[in-house]
Length: 122
Image (cartoon, rainbow, N blue to C red; front, side):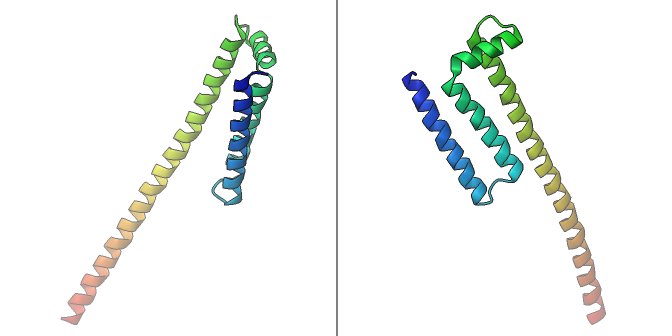
């Protein structure tokens, strides 16, 4: 095993503990925790068995070299993560817009009632 593999294993294990800690502090939901842990387990397996996994993916995808297969899979996973982040940001923007509308409507109602109270008191 190469030194870079040991480094990768230590980094991935540290990330797994970090994600577990975030879940324990309720900063991650169950689905997010599961997603990241599965992704980190896959990364750990790739760090331990890089050649075997690269060759299996190479044969499955019909690519010329094993490293190309790992890059193709890595790019695909990156797009999945980007899509997940995009959906979360879009959902958050929609929630902020809806909350802003509700607050504006309620503020307008409060202002209208205050004006009515002022008119009655005069």
